[in-house]
Length: 570
Image 1 (spheres, one colour):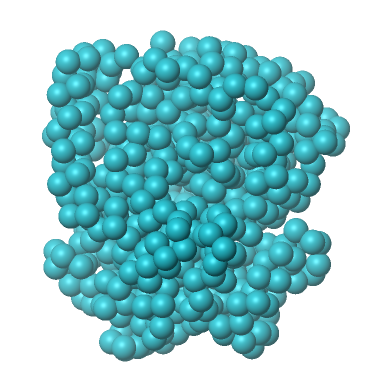
Image 2: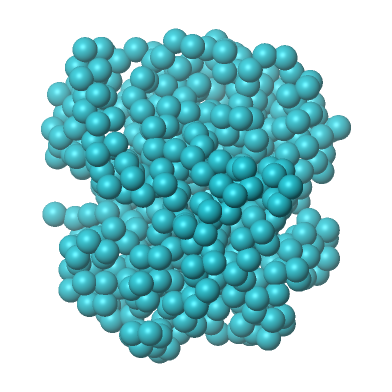
């Protein structure tokens, strides 16, 4: 039996109850979005008492399946004003799944300015512990103090000072398998929601070694073996990622002119090789770091890395493609050490690297500092939690920066920054950025694979709506099952159906599963509609239609009428 832990911060009471029948078979994003849809008033203040913070492992998390340790965190977003699911790795999802916890729902807010740790034991019992002594701590120091203060193995989900201050781009940080808070549920400002609930950290006991028992163990074992073989055999997950991590994308995306740099005014970063996968791997190897590292439980891909400085001292893990873009090419910065320090700083204070880097890029584009000024960029990001006016502005995200400066080139959708794929260089990303219920996103419907493989022409409008629709549905499924995004190419519908049926003892068809994943998107869009979103919110900023992107000198070609049929499901 799966249970829901409901934590009422108004009266500091915790209730354990069976997962309602109406939520049967839901996990991860499917469950977080459904609970937010059902329990949060769409017009609620994101940082108010009526919002919920929902934490849910995937449907397959906690089982013996490889790469199924992703955690979904949902709430109404203070950044977009709409529904949000932010996804993170580490080790928490696996252990919540092993305990039979389907979701942790945090509601209400403390009546006084108190702060707490939510401690979840190995049998699923939970208690709130006052933690005012941890107020203001950055995440690395917090993780160290908690390791010393609490005996036994545990994983931590926490916020930095940015979350406590209600910063709109605040992240929730998760510890990796080595206990470092370097995994981020970064997008949408959910760290601010956690801070508004008075929760500094959630500590999950990891001593439970017994995996969740599938309804049909033999069928599950057989399907899990096929899944692992498929992940290892796929070129991207089996070869590119273990060798270069996600930075393997740097060369291919620049090669097709779709790398938005200098605040999305160019499609090729002239110095991309200095921060690309080969340079990153070489630098790490020369200094004695790790180019292959297990960041998340049950991982067989090893896309993570450990970046070290010239003295071989740990700086950050993992230095990812999106951060290399946002803190690198987007700001005209081509120094790996600078980017690594920015990544560590963002994790430590608890902010999204994508939003933070893009906010600084807008400042640069508006003439407030020079492109490529890494030192000043580090200083400005540090000011997010220092309470300065410029820090508060950056903490509001790139849309806030653009509005304040009256600058027209602000690459956001629904208030959230685009990712490292320019929609003029990969036309299908225009559809995904514009229509994703959670704002522009780097995972929700990424079409880089389809563009590089020739399945679609990235510079043509043909087939882009259908491709984005199909990918958004598929990724809603991956997020709901708790699977790593990088298994998506290897996970056939037939195989996923076998895993789900063996897990639950059901007889779902592939169509049943796909209909369920479509329902996730419908649920999210319905919440947004009731929150006041209209078709006008499913649009890109005008400069994407007016300003051609070198080197192909294309603008976005997809018309509004095409965008509006993205979710015309059959």
